[in-house]
Length: 285
Image (cartoon, rainbow, N blue to C red; front, side, top):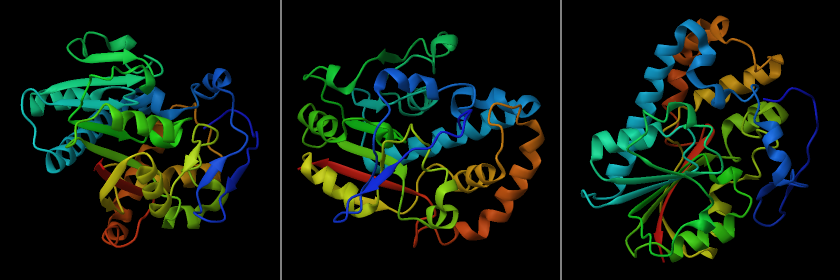
C-alpha cells in the first residue's frame, strides 16, 4: 500500500524466530507512508457506492470485538477500557453503546476522528503515546487491535502498561501471525508485511516471550481474531496483481464478496491452524 516499489529489509532472530524491520523508517518520516494508498485511512468511502455495506461490515467487526471484551472481563459502569492505537474509534463507540462503561482511546494522530468529531464527542480520545498515560489510570481492559506490530518500543510500552494496570486487568492483543498459512502461501506478497508500517512480526512463541519479559502472563492464545482472515488473503492477492491502492475500489467489490464466500470452507480449520491472525489475552504477573 505505497506508491513506489521501495524495498525494505527484515531480519529474523535465529533463536526465537522473531521478525523485525531493519533498519526502521525514522519516526519523523513514517507519515510519508500513510497516504491515499493506505486503504484503512480511506475507510468505507474508498468503496464508492458500496460505502454503506462496508460501514455495516465495520459495525459487525466492532461488535465482535465488544463480544471478545465481554468474554474476557466482567465489566461494570465504572470499568475503563483503554484502546491503544484507536484509529477511527468505532470500536470504542460500540463499547459505549453496548457496555455502558468508561472508555479512552489514544493514537499518534487524530486522523481517525478529527473530521467526525460530533460522532465521537462523548469519547475520551487523545493524541498521545503510551508513556504519556498517567500512572494512576488503572484500566480494567486494554485492547490493541492490530497495533502492536506498529509499535516502535514494544517491550518498554508493554512494561509501562503493566505498571499502570490493576492486578486483574485484561490485555487483549490481535496481530498478524507470521507462522500462518497465508504468510507461507504468499511469501513476499503477504499483506502482513505492510512495509514499512509493520515494525514487528510475531509468532505465538515469541509474542509470549515478549509478554513474559514485560510482566504479563498469557492466559489464552487463539489462532484467529475478530478480523476476518480472508482480508489478508484478499490484500495479498491484490499485491500479487500490483493493484493501485489509491483507486476507487468499486470495481473490486463483487469479486471481493465472491472470494469471501468461497473462503468460508477454509475458515472451518481456523481454530486448529492460523490462517493469518492470532489473539493473545494476558493479565499482569
